[in-house]
Amino acid sequence: MLLIAGLGNPGPKHENNRHNVGFMAADAIARRHSFSPWSRKFQGLVAEGRIGGEKVLLIKPQTFMNLSGQSVGEAMRFHKLGPSDLIVLYDELDLAPARVRIKTGGGAGGHNGIRSIDAHCGKDYRRVRIGIGHPGIKEMVSPHVLGDFAKADREWLEPLLDAIADHAGMLVSGDDNGFMNKVSLALRGPDEPKAAKPAPKGQSHIRQARPKGPAAQVPESGPMAAMLRKLFGGSD
Image (cartoon, rainbow, N blue to C red; front, side, top):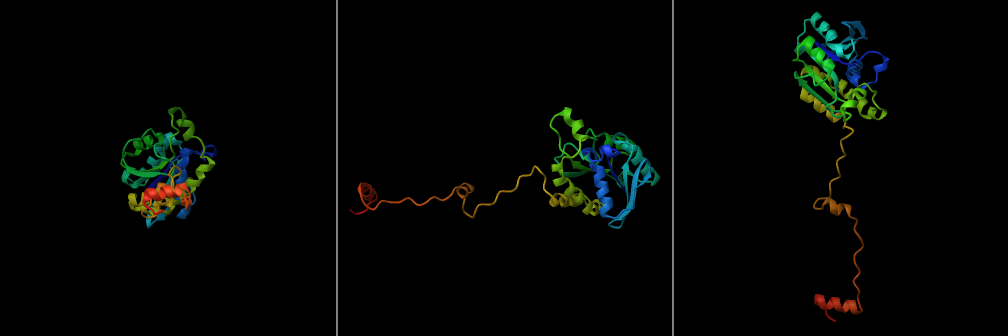
């Protein structure tokens, strides 16, 4: 059995916050794989189901982000699970929007939800970091994280959540690299430029971009024609 925890803050006020992308990912997985309805247990909301033949318990802690470990730890102790049976989905400031990276263990990176889980559950669990981007200055971090996703963000957020849910089987089976590759292929980040069209073979981009002008007209008679014939060896 695996425990997949999506992190966030409870209540409608926080529903669309960037900090709640872990909740959003857990909801997408539950919908895609026809999990049971959410019910209250372990100081959180839980849903049960199977992914790729593996029994999975989804949990969304309702303790608020900073105390996430209380809820996740209670569920782990009840089901006699270890850190290797835990996967945590959460927001990552240090990743560009629409990027997903997975690592096992490591530090909390300033994330209070992860710090709480580390304290209650140990550190050697798999962390699915979902990029929300950094506002650029430290003073704006809190309003950025606790602010709602912008309408423009929906262009990448909804396909990203769908991709996470669609390929959750790879996550459950332990194919972290395959999972990240599939999610990356499913969408392109908002800051990724489109590839330039290749120039025709043997032709540079500079030449391709320069329109071809009309051929120069060579005079057939007059002083200029006589001079050109003299220069290039033509006959008079």
